[in-house]
Image 1 (cartoon, rainbow, N blue to C red):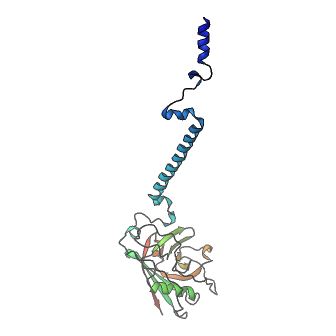
Image 2 (cartoon, one colour; image 1 turned 90 degrees about the horizontal axis):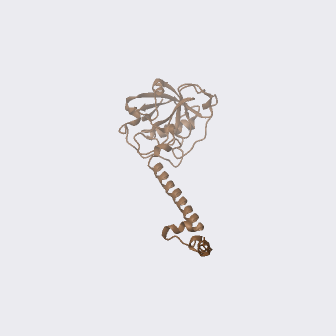
Image 3 (cartoon, helix red, strand yellow; image 1 turned 30 degrees about the vertical axis):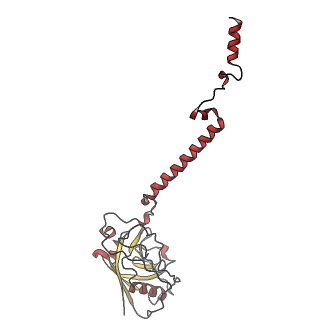
Length: 256
């Protein structure tokens, strides 16, 4: 091999020559020749992907509210009373600024007739006016003002067995999903304890707040902290057939 060829080969790999890496890529390929720029662009692509993914995920949740609903308030399928939007008109929820004045006479006998919509039957209840007058007074006031008309039994629980209604946001045929089971009439009343304890047997009504009442369908000590409202005298079999979403047509009060 000649001396000239050896010098030429060495020259090709001398620092500063094209073969030593001094040829700079052009256009978008310059990224690969600059380590800092390469990692900066990679980081920007990663952040952008996370941002776009978050938007897509958020959009999917907004478009499908059923995935976030509490199943306690899902109306039953295949039940005409729960799904028939024409059963009762949607009304504006009633709210009051203060508790009603005492208008009942605790010495009288008060009976409430809870009429279910779509001919599903009536439930008659003797109210405990003498034992818990403030609670019965509130219930009678709301019933006479039509507060319960069109509301639904939004909750049915198997253990302990009971059904519950009286949330003004849980209406028959309502649009959207406003029923959360936390509504009230806009005022509160203090719990009352009868002088003689009233057991929660099947058919006993209790109040969970100023407007929401429940019907015990089995004996349970779990209800003992709630004020008893009355006792079913007729229609216990009707109450036992109530499903989530069953509408109340009306609650009427008679006094003797």
